[in-house]
Every structure is written in structure tokens, then in C-alpha cells.
Image (cartoon, rainbow, N blue to C red):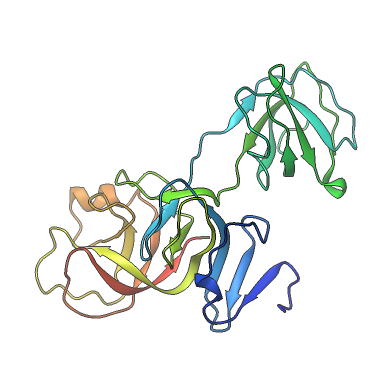
Length: 254
């Protein structure tokens, strides 16, 4: 048992276990004895292979100026939202983005399916509304948990990586994904000079291979543009570059 009650202690091998049934709140932190850090996640519709960085769908559901007023202390709120299934937003976040209550965020316990163009969002009893919602100006967004429905990072380099797959994970399975520590990562060395050593080189999202990490080298216009992409971590091995292979890395995502 971890000294922190909401952190799961992972004995060797537990980080590779997958399940069809949910065991923890999505995003729960897990830590191995050697200090590697993981987050509990739900895979999307495509199987995952180890060594690849993962992201999630970022489009929120929003309601501009809520249509139902709610008092302070409410823990079941009504939000206009079309096409939502039951518990799509479980473990996600309700954020007041404008107007009265702006800046407040609540963890979502669950939600109903859309009925008559609205859903009911259940909040935790000790995390109920701090500020009354006003129909004149309160705007809210609903966000799925960042570890809900993971997919391999695409090659546009624009999506936020939230974990690294450390095992083969079937579609729609729950799993642990690594966010800190030593990890085996697929490296994109496409176009690099043969024999370039990889010791402690900065890693960013690849634009060549989905889910891989790109090694920055000498600065030029292309590398400057690469500087706007997310830093994934650092290589800690030292050997010749070979494209599309596993190398040992230190990742640091969140």
C-alpha cells in the first residue's frame, strides 16, 4: 500500500496487466518500486503495442449559457448535450468557462444518456457546486478524462501525449500507461546521419512514425519548427541511430 492513499503501488509486472473491467478511477497514479510512474487508462478501439506514445480525443462538449439554473451545493446538474451515451464523461471534468462561476472545475462521477437534448451530470457529494449557475451568462464545457479512449499519437505532432504503452493492450481494455521514468521507446531517426550517437538527446513527437519519438539534432529551419512540438523525454542509451527501433529512454509527460 502506498503512503499516498490515491497512489497504487505496482509490484513488478503489475504495470503490464490489462483488464476488461474497470479497477480504478481513470488517471489514477501508479508507482513501481523503482520509481517509474504510470496512469490508469482505457484503450480506444484499436489494439496498442508497447513502445508507442499515446494521446486522446480532445474535443469537448460545451453549452454556451446554461439553460437550467442551479443553486450552490447542487451535485446533479443538467447540461444541454446531443448524442451522449451513459457515462461518456465518467472520471472527466466539468469546467465553467465563462460567466458566473468561471474557472471552477468538478470531477464527474457519471452522466445520463441524452434525453430531450439534455444530460444529467452527477458530481461527487463533496465536490458540489461552489457557485450558483446563472442562465444569463454561465457557460460550461464537459471534457472526457485524458486517459479515456487512448490512441497512438498521429504524425502531425500536435496532439498531447499522455502516456507510453508498456504492454500489448487489446481494444477497449483498461491498462497502465507510463508517464515518467526509464522506458523502452520506438525512436524515429529518419534522415539522421548514420552513426549519430543517442546519448541524452532531446525527444519530441515524430512526424514520420505514429507514436514514436524524434531525435532533435543540429538546428535548422526544420528543427526550429520541431521546437514547437511537445518534449517527450530524453534518450539515455548511447549507440548508433537506427530508424524505427526500440531504445531505452527517460520519459516525462505529466
